[in-house]
Length: 377
Image 1 (cartoon, rainbow, N blue to C red):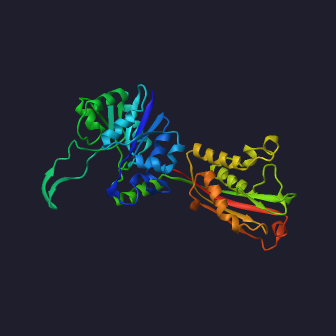
Image 2 (image 1 turned 90 degrees about the horizontal axis):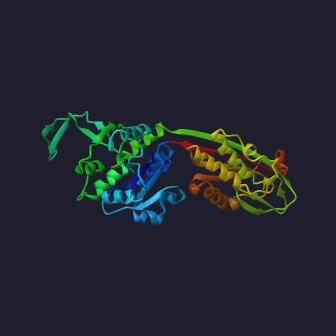
Image 3 (image 1 turned 90 degrees about the vertical axis):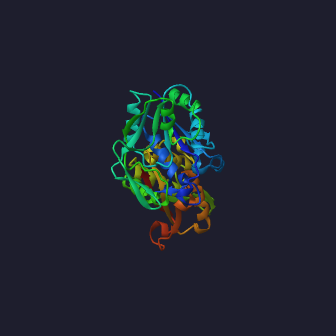
C-alpha cells in the first residue's frame, strides 16, 4: 500500500517573526522544513513525499529542494487550496498523510499510529487529550469555564484514503480549520489516534526555542577525525581542497593526491564508523589512478545522507611550509562547501607550519588533519 506524505509549507507564518517564513528558519542546524522532511523521508512506510510551497520559495529554491527526490506543488490562496494542489499530484490509490511543515518534531510513533488506524477506516488523525482547565475569557477576564471532557488538541499528520479525501475536498466550500473538518463535512468518520505533547506546531517566536530543545534532545551527534600525508614528487602544481596551485613540485598519490580532500573524506567516514578511503576505494585498484578526489568526497557525503546524517561543520588544517595556503583558502572553502552541500561559513580551511621540524618542516610533503561533525535527528 502506497503512503504519500503531503507536507504543506506554503504559508507565510508572520506570527512567528523573523525575516523569512517560519518553515525556512533555522533550528539545530537545519531549517524547520528540512527537519520535517527528514522525519517522513526516513520513515520506512512512507513511499512518496509531496511538498506544497509558495511560488516565491520555489523560485528562490530555498533548502535546495530541487536536489531532493520530492514532488513540488504550488500553494494556493488558502490552506485548503494548497492541500488540493498537493493531492492532485497523487496518482492512483493508497493512503495520504497531510502534515503541517511547522510540526517539525513529529515522531515516527505518531505517524505509525495514523497509518495503523487507516487499516480499519478511511480517516485518522492524532489528537492530544486536553488536561488543563479551560476558561472562556473576554477582555483579559475569566467569564466562564468549559468542560474539558472529550476535548482533544488536533495535530497532524491527518491521514486518509486518497480517493476519499479527494472526493471530500471536491465538494467542500468555504474555509476549513484542518483536513479533518473537510472529511467530517462529507460525513466521513475520523478515528482519533495518540498524539504527542512534543508534536508542537511552531506558531510564535517562543516555539522555536522549545522545538530546538526537543530536536537536540533526540540528536545523534558524531565527530569524525581524519589525518593524511602525501610526499612531494615531480610536478608543477598541487591540488589542495579541490584548488590547483602552481608549485615547483607535485604531490605523490594514487589519485590526484589532494591531501586536504582525502582528509576531510576520512573524517566523514570516521564519524559514520565506516572505515577510510582505502576501504572504499582501494589504491590497488587501477581505476582510481589519477582519479579526482571529489569522487571520494561525494561518496562519503552520499553515504552520510543514506545513513540519515547531516554534515553540519568541517574543519580542515593543512600542515606545510609551502605552498602558501592563505591566498587560496577562500576558494578552497567555496569548492569544499559546494561538494558537501554546506554553506561556506560551515567549512573551515586553514594552514599552519611545523616550525621547520619533521618531514613537513623539511619540505618533504604535506600533512593534513580534519574534523567533521555529523548530526542525525
